[in-house]
Length: 378
Image (cartoon, rainbow, N blue to C red; front, top):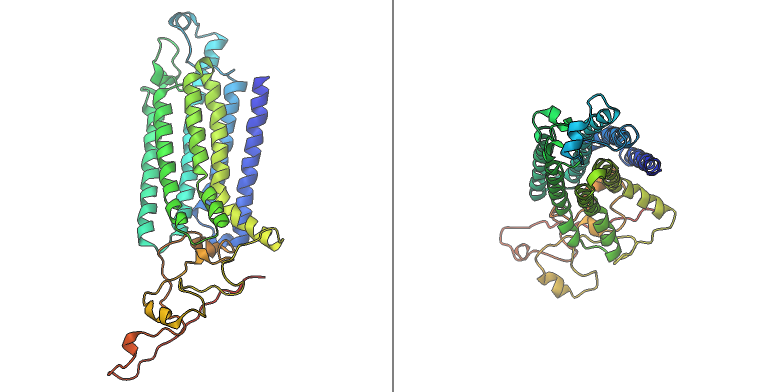
């Protein structure tokens, strides 16, 4: 009965995950067009295939191998178990499937991390300081993936000891409950998630946004916290599961990766959802200025004391993230989601003149005045 419940749960989660990926592709198709698809748009369908294979492996652990593997056996049980028996066959098959399941689980999670890093590279394009952080993310993702896969495939050597029954192969060669697999995977998984979250979060705290919009973005980009929590919970349950370790490993792998798939696609789906909500009149944006124009300067609006304006020689600019209705509307707006140090071309506020231009002995100087407005979309 428990196996049937998990089967329903696993394939339901798979269906929702596939639908989420399809919605993401449709959202990107609408906002960017297929010609503007980036690498992560092609990696995500591949992640969906890997997730389907992982779900199939988890299903086999319970349906084919009855939740058995080469763990949770006494020395006497190992010695008396005949290699020709059905249980022996189930335990060997279950152990092999565990190795496959761990590999698929790791590959899926790290594919999703790579997609998120690619997404961040688009958001921060043109920023020297952020470009370095994203490049570090690429290196971190690549090296940690190699480390985890090597721990899974070579932590027990030779490979066939992963499904050895007798003599007792040791914990490292019991893939369902292998401590090296569990601890190496969860440690590097959490470490990479923390680093990925650290890329946009500090910038969001500095954003000049209404609190509600800032909260939305913080929740959106902090979804990795839920993935980390699921990974840690999975680790604890596997280590403490005992004889049910094989079944727990498969079931919680599906749950964790489901959360990761949904969260990994949320930033791509959210812009389209927000656009639809605004067009339907469901989303009420809070604006600190008029509905039609938004100055790019942090100085006061027209009508303030002109001497104050004249005294403020430092040019400040309002980042597009602080301008309502300019982000999340098109694919190019991905670069406007995060507040950055990217500067607009220098402009001069109305009525502000450089001191050098007054009383100059070098002749006439031409001072241009540029007023930048953003018209709210209907």
